[in-house]
Image 1 (cartoon, rainbow, N blue to C red):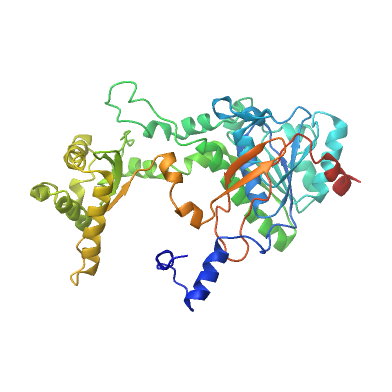
Image 2 (cartoon, rainbow, N blue to C red; image 1 turned 60 degrees about the vertical axis):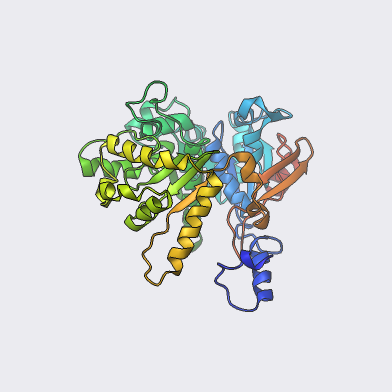
Amino acid sequence: MSEKEQILVRYGGSRKEREIFLKSMMSPDGKPEVLDDDVILDASYANMSGDICSSIYAEFGAEVIKIEPPEGDPSRKITHYGVNRNGTGVPFIMEARNKRYITLDLRKESDREDFKKLARKAHVVIDTYEPGQMDAWGIGYRQLSELNPGLVYIAISSYGQYGKKAQEMIDVPDSDITAQAVSGAAANIGDVATAEEPYNWPLRAGVWLGWHTSGILAAQGGAIARYYARATGEGQMVDVATADAYSSLVGYPVMVAFTWDKARPRIGIHDFCLYPYGFWKSRDGMVAIAASRDHDFRALLKILKIWKHEDDWRFTFDRIPDMLTLVEELYGLIGNETKKYTSDELVKMALDYSIKSARSKWRGGGVPIIMKVQNPSTTMQNPHWAVRNSFKEFDESGIGKVKLPVNFIKMSESPPRVKWVRCAIGQDNDYIRKKYLQ
């Protein structure tokens, strides 16, 4: 590991000690799994948010038991461009890490009895069925909490387990796209409303960002509930509505509405709070620019050799107006110059200026940020991933070779880890029955 890779690490001791520490930070080997005493029953069905939630617990060492009907969870069929491994889609394989699989048909009384036996020994249950279904089967929170008072019961659905909206939409399956639509976020993403069709349409954000958000927040809420249960012995219900979870990401437009007394319009690639703050074309691609503070903005003008416009945009509030015409004008002014340089040239220009500014005794010279926008292919060539051990390849029976992002959080004492990704339907029936049902 080179000295350059250590320069920003605030860690004392000799160089050798720093190298040992950093190497340890990037590896989970030999470290304890903080949740290795926890048993998680993942009864999620046709809903990736439940799988995402249980994956987080599995990476921290919990024994996650995925409950599936004999034909398998329908989520197995969800995949990009129809790509699958022996009938299992890529997203399901991605969320299969470290889990055990048992087949139980919860529509049958006998299998529900087995589920109750498992729940007596479990610490967390994850439910993504329509609200009230598990309760109607006699295996909801109301019934299971009597059998296991310390149980944390996580329920994820479109609109939660309570209220008029939950009742009205009870038969509507939870989905990422509906969560994005109902949250209002989609209406704020995409080109400006005045653009020509189809560019002025609302846009979906990310790859199943709604499901990921609800899954992550469910895992967070469940972990805190487990902390409470360890301290008091009392379990609790954790009710997560995907619409609520996704809406938690769009608080800023709500604040804008209160400030302006009107809804924030769709602003496309712009940002009303910070500016310049977005993406611009270079001669050979795209760059991201962040120069929203006054002195950073003035430095950007110097770098791009357009200082003559400083008087026109002297004050911060001239650059964050609620008038798109002014934003578009400034965007075009900057874009006319960035197109004259390659992305690498622009990055170097900003770095060179920032270094001189940082060394100046006067300070306040501005530190504009310009970064090259990478595509997936060039991103994977970045040595950053290798240094941090961010990806790991697995060769599993029935799946073949797959490469997954692993160890998403670096922790010095109790990090997450991925041990396997095999996920055949019912592959662990004998193991689970022998360990928990005999």
